[in-house]
Image (cartoon, rainbow, N blue to C red; front, side, top):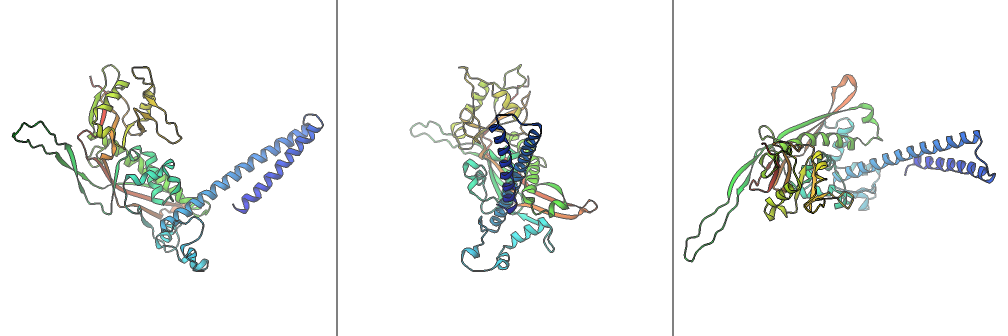
Length: 425
């Protein structure tokens, strides 16, 4: 806690004591406040409210600064949160100058790039640490243990992408490659089948059918301009702000194509290759019923619908209508999440909402259900983060640019993910 916060708290205690004394005097004399006392009482309470806001803002600022420092230490690989370096832990006895010199080149470059330090690079690749697949992203959910793991700048970017595009939290498999060359992934179109064989009869051959899904590296970019004053203000969590702004912008652009991308100069959205599981009845404008959801659920074979990553995906507006759906016994099929942060459920499977899913309507693929681990998202390298002081020189704005390259495709089109479609008749 800083000295400023301590002084503000001391002042608050003094003001509270003044207000308490004023109230006690009136109570002892068994009377109401006089006009002057009422004015003093209101003034003291207003000051207490103002002090509470200032103290809260200061504590929030200190918490953000601490979080940023922890993230920077994690980027360096030390992951310390107590303000000490690894050299301190080993008992090296080095001073502050030596400790600062012990920072990794990566941390020095990232800090220098964000603050515009002399000689610092103007671009840096923000990359994940270690092997990447979707399961590593589950740590971003606090109930799953996310609060116990240090957050890097890359993780912050990905977290805000996930907050914007729910398909990234639906259990998709994330492949991270160093380069952006096109990669080929085997795609299952049909599975093998077996049959009854008579004694001494020939056994039929049934091979699974495969195709290939090409994962390219389409480029997505965003620019964010920040005032020079904001960059120079050391109390501002600049890294957190930039991670939030660029992460959400990239999530909006990339996430939309992961859902409804055409596959032509953009990713193949999951709705493009999902299998028809149910068509709504006529005369309902494509709005699915409870029976439609049950039919969709059981249109998937057991290994898919019982998979750990099996889930529902739909638009927020679709959720409003489906929450009112009842089964044949009059019970709501919607199961409200009982724990804070836990997803709502339909037929025992989590419901995720994505703003890019089509709304219910004639011909629309408004509801998806299936094993989302069969959808592959490819990220080429890290996220390129660049700074320019010249782009908006005349307005004294610093411009930051974030670039991401990625693609996506459903690699199991044999019915791993199915959809409800509005009746076109």
